Length: 192
Ligand code: GLN
Image (cartoon, rainbow, N blue to C red):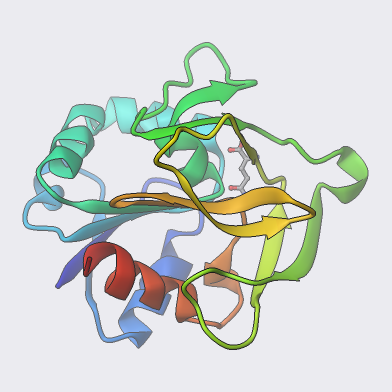
């Protein structure tokens, strides 16, 4: 099993560390050839406008879409979830998503006062304690397509979703020291 971490901007080191702790071979992805032979790809949180620009300048849009079509799973957190969506609400004009996950996502959707906060959320498919969810200028999922499954919610709103080989989470499991969400991606999403 080999999982790539998109290493253009944002919290890619933290994801790499989670995957390594789980004993998975990881590789930083910055160029198209680095996608070859990957079972999964993590797109980290950060700034989705910056990551989108770098995806374009590194010619990664089509290669990522092709690798996904050919069976690679993708896990996006926060800005990564924004980039997976079919449609971004509040996108800048030059901010093009990969357009794979059948949702509309709204950027910076929590008001300024609560732009960042932490809470515990139960996660469908993960047993035991709820997952600690750290929201940092997080997006909201809206208009979910029929095949999009909700895995965690906060106040009745989806905060983690899955559609087949795509896992998208509005918060940051890579910052908690709890490896269960990464393990879920490996076992349940890639392994399914
Ligand atoms: N607000 C950021 C964006 O729109 C995402 C924040 C994050 O990834 N923590 O890209």
